[in-house]
Length: 361
Image (cartoon, one colour):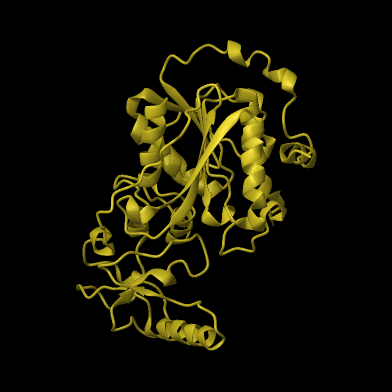
């Protein structure tokens, strides 16, 4: 049985009836350049990359993001004349304006190597994150955009022995798209972060090229030193001596058990590990910063600020690791900001892929 058919049956009729598509070809050509919709928008990293590549010849006409804190950051950085839509499963595809390119960084936690690998069975707060990509398919089946662009974790390719990726690919193919996919590493695109992600570029078959060459990036090395804040960095980012002892004990326990978990101090002339949205995300990218800084705590801590000058990277430094521009506004508390950048995309990678897409279009 065709895998796309299986998915349709399991999705409780999430796809629209084919009869709704009869007049899609009659939608007038867009007069104001390329139009995007931004699904699972997060804080707008994919949109930033595409708008930088397409410049004034583009407009984002619809945004969907269900997290209220991400919505706040998004609104602070984009001057849209429409409201951000919430839960994508409740959005009627017929109410979405016509668009040329669908941007969709559908949730990656279901397929992440750091997660539970539950894939299509992943349930978070009553939402099946593993199947939310079906809403991308539902919307694109109705609108038939020129391109569907998706980003996800590298683990998507090998999840469930490759069957998950095969289903996603065949679903888009069944909707009339030719799918190109590539794993790219952010460190090759002007940021000092080792971050491998898979990118899907799906061209509608009537305009699809024979091949699509993903960008190779530049091999010019960029180091953590290049993205560090000016000194003095606020003392709240320097960890306490008590906490450092806890981190060392934690790593020793895991090493004794044969595990590889624990804090990591990065060489500032090297690159950062993948920043993530939770867990040990900050502690696996500690640095030693000997520049002058205050030893007076800004918050209540146990013990004293460590005398080895070990600190976390700041939220702005995380933004730079993801290629966000300096004028991108960070309006929320650090806890939310770290989570948002760890869960976002590397803008410089997106921009280079978008430039390639623009060339083909």
